[in-house]
Image (tube, rainbow, N blue to C red; front, top):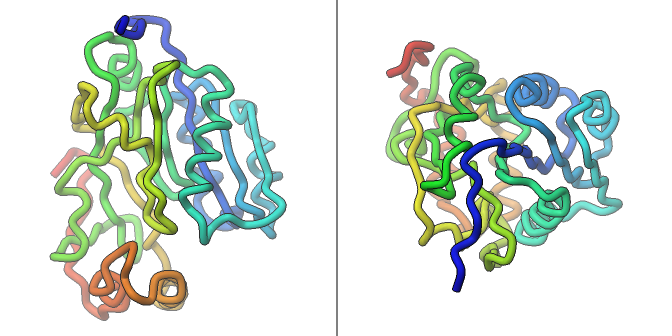
Length: 243
């Protein structure tokens, strides 16, 4: 089998994102950040009932927006697969899988091109920090330590390669599992995950949602779900100059 052609320069970077009711959260900030270092943005809106689609349309780099008439949230595998299909239909060179509450630190704007304009590896992984309660601290304990490992969010699109997502209702990997055997790189660029930034009432809502969707812990950890409401979690100060 002939090795797929891998461009070492002139690669186009497309961000892909699934959203639902994000108009009053961090979507505007995230899209502004992405617009500084990606070429295009592709979005699948999961039947939002607020102004999320209109907010997406305000950004010139959003080249494709698909608004679903009915939510697929309880079938996340289908949603991830649909987003992938929509994104690759734009013929990207590289794809950045990003959620509407994730911010890449500023160094990404200068370093991202060097990560994609090469022909040695096909995926890049980053460390993601769960910011907690505000933007100044992240959580670190036995249940919240995602930042201690690397998460693949940036991948080269290889036409003809076999892609697949695991059939899971929740917590589906954001890029196809078939990237595993391919060569990759772990980058020092960090990501702030803002999904847990909010008052106690917001955390209560997220806890109740996860318990309703996954009451038996089939797709995630019940212990982690319960820890969402821990009154005094261990927090570590975020440092802009690194850890």
